[in-house]
Length: 364
Image (cartoon, rainbow, N blue to C red; front, side, top):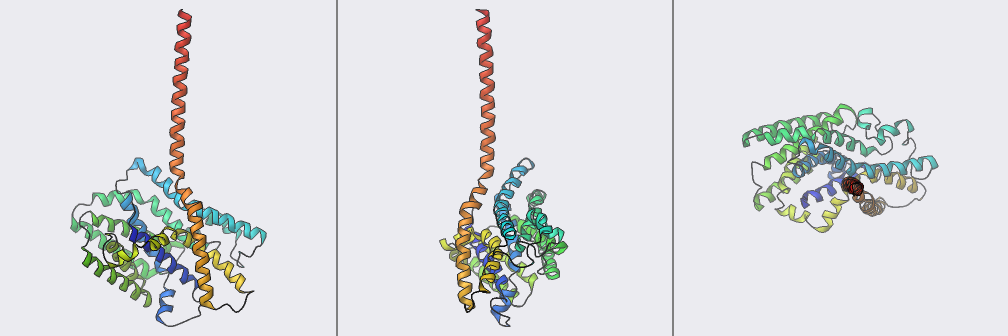
């Protein structure tokens, strides 16, 4: 089940993170509106957490305990193939001392924790592929999803879900105001978990209230975008979380001016490759910075445009050849198990037939 405006939203959020990491090294320090918005790009990660909770609650609303192993397998196959591929590439680059690395970024002592996506818990802050910290927190959210969605399903009444949603929103606001751009330790975990729970409860609100009419959806979408930009420009991270939640809710009905714009094919494609954009951009920044040190005179805007072009092309390739095949692994394993069971049953039938045939011959 795909909600195309929300898919597109992932793509724009991923690009916001990218430009946040390019600033200020590539564009220089600034005091203007654009500079403040770029400096607040870490808030896009919190949007990801809320969006993840909402989407998973939409797709797996009826999840029960027997389905948990399959759910976790699908989530692992969603994130690990690309992550492991990137980590393997970085390891080869570090061993061969290629241009891919940045001094001090490859700490072999931190490699196991980053490979297992435990860096948010072990404190490996800037090792290997720093943005992958949030994927480790996402895995914790996946492990907590079943009790969260079961409690949300059992919530009866519009007033109760609104009360819970308000409490989750307050917790998210407090976590973001206190920890902001924290990426390790308690602050990182709280950023992820509060945002994820808020997203799940936001989906629970849909069970009690129909989506907004197109005109009201447009007002909500534009207001949420304005609130998000204001929060970024004023460095009010807590407000960014609330604006992100409102934007997701207003886009989910797929009506309204922003939702229609986000339904454009190129926007949807950007969202489809957003996970690759997110995990690839940091290593690619290292490459560009090493090359730039030897090739002087490239204007910052031209360099950024070239960087984004290369990043999008690589993201499309890894989406097609790593992400999509990875998503098919659970189905292949299920099919292999089914074929194995079918083969075993056929073997047992053949053995029973052989026994009956031998018995008949002996009687004859």
